[in-house]
Image (cartoon, rainbow, N blue to C red; front, side, top):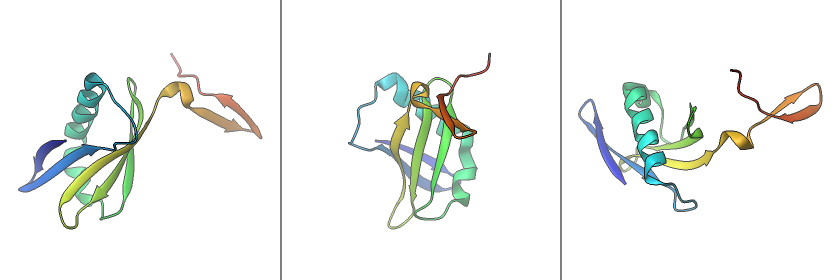
Length: 97
């Protein structure tokens, strides 16, 4: 669990107990939150959003504002589990470059 502030609001960033993340992955997630900053304030209680991080994959966040301001990392999906649906065919995602 980590604490951070946006405008005078104290937030808590917590990680779902349903999965284990290494400390370096947690740090990459914390850095992503620092970059998004004040945009978090636009989300309502109960909303979710995703950050795509080249190193981590898709990071799914859940926003709580009642009774406290909490962001929960509810899931992380690594890029090797991405798929693309095109023309009724599903293929593994391949990053360009």
